[in-house]
Length: 271
Picture (cartoon, rainbow, N blue to C red):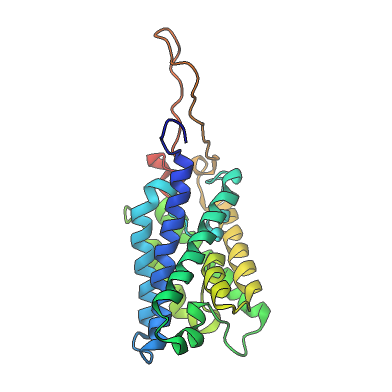
């Protein structure tokens, strides 16, 4: 921050934290509400809550940060050279912070129904009895791979349809309909992290850390070497703004600094 102006990267991190908070508060909150209302929402309601919240959050914050809200998505984009590696740790930190804040807020607003919080573990994704560790990791990896294909195909590609975040949100909803009863279908390490920490239900962590990160990495590799065209395989470049002496009339024009990497079309230079 210089002269009172917030840097583009700081704005992006705040957008990631706020968008993650929004997404998880609605998604995990729907699970707690379902437990508190004797399954009034059901699997379809929970899936729609996640999908709709993510769709609108991406549409709202995508132009600022890219609307990742998911450490796995950030990793997949970095693998595909669509997000700078040096910004992966800061994005992850913002996403984990948003996740923790959402879980803390859920614990506060559902304090009147402690039984529902205990049953739902504040919306922590749970692996069903009988599903082995390896099977759960594979399921999460495959569901996250589908999510990454949706991100690349509907947002990153220069030929992406102009549907903002709704293709991505619909993919999350569909994945939950299939995988929710099996693994919780987090597709997102942060989605597990906040509720698990606040509810102190730190089980199945390997499933929701290894599975999504593995699936996202495979998705990034597939876009970079299989599905992406030649131009789409070019790495993103971030040119930092210069704060030296103002240019003189006879100076050559400087290259404009690109905005922070975002899950938007390459055609609009938002990635």
